[in-house]
Image (cartoon, rainbow, N blue to C red):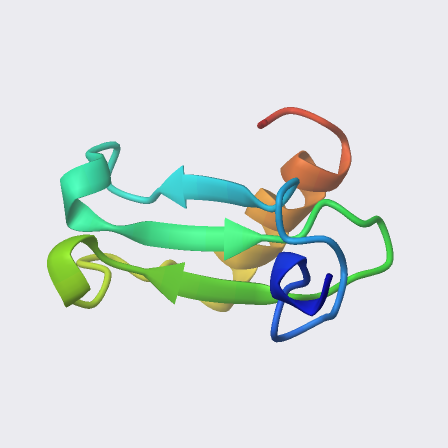
Length: 73
């Protein structure tokens, strides 16, 4: 079903990993696709607000590496 796919990368949405970048889910964070060759990443916030902390590109790459190696999820 198309609704079950990520709108950015078209991989299944369900296994995408949501990371609260401040440690508090109320502050929002990032969502990263766990597919090893995928570079999909997006931000999310609570109650329609933007994420309070969007990490620097180097930190995003480290989070992606950790997601791809199963350290989150």
